[in-house]
Structures are given as structure tokens and as C-alpha cells.
Length: 127
Image (cartoon, rainbow, N blue to C red; front, side, top):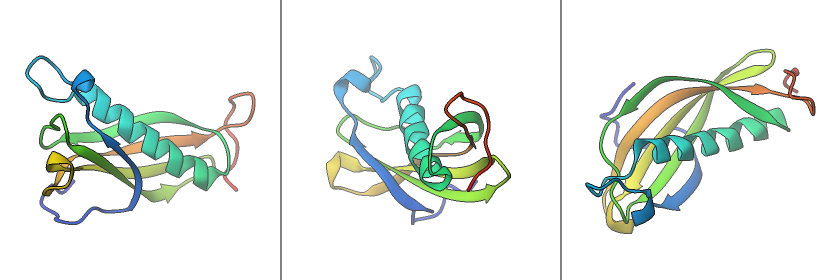
């Protein structure tokens, strides 16, 4: 993982505003909230590639680089690194716009694995 890049890797998948209800008593946004937003973005990218339902099966190599503040716009980027028969590995980066429109800063990144599933929840081949 590389936290020194100044440009996001991948395609912008989601954007959301970090709100006071997502913060801990110190005013920092909970890491679990950020992780959830990344999982949502990864699910969107994976579902598009699978042309259907997907499930998260692993989260590897998470790196929390900087905190997210209340009022930051969290922008999540995704890039499919590799695909297998039923699964795919997606690199996900979360960046913020400080104070909604300010400096763009990378806050976390990780690799998520999703599997394509059928209506019964069983793995199915990617199209």
C-alpha cells in the first residue's frame, strides 16, 4: 500500500458527508463507519462486474492513514485488481475533502474480496 500518492487510484464509487452522529467522543469519525462506506463502494463495483449479487468474503491489508473529521466529504474509489472464477479482489481507497471542499487527503485503503452469488447465496461464476 502506498499512502504517498496524490491522486486516487480507481473510479469514484461513492461520496458521503461525515456527520456528528458518526463520530466518537473525541470528534473523530469511527473507523468502523469508514470501513462500512468502503464495503458499500466495493459492493457496488463488485456487483456491477458480477452483474448481480455479491458478498464480501475478506478484507485484507487495511491501512488507516489519517482520521476523518466531522464535515469531511468521504470519497471512496475502487479498482478491480483481479478476478477469479467466482471472486474478485478490489482495491479500495477512501479520500476526504477537508471541510467539504478543501484539501483532498487519503485517509485509508484496503483490499476487499467479493464473491458472486446466486439467489440462494451460493457462489456462481462471473460472467
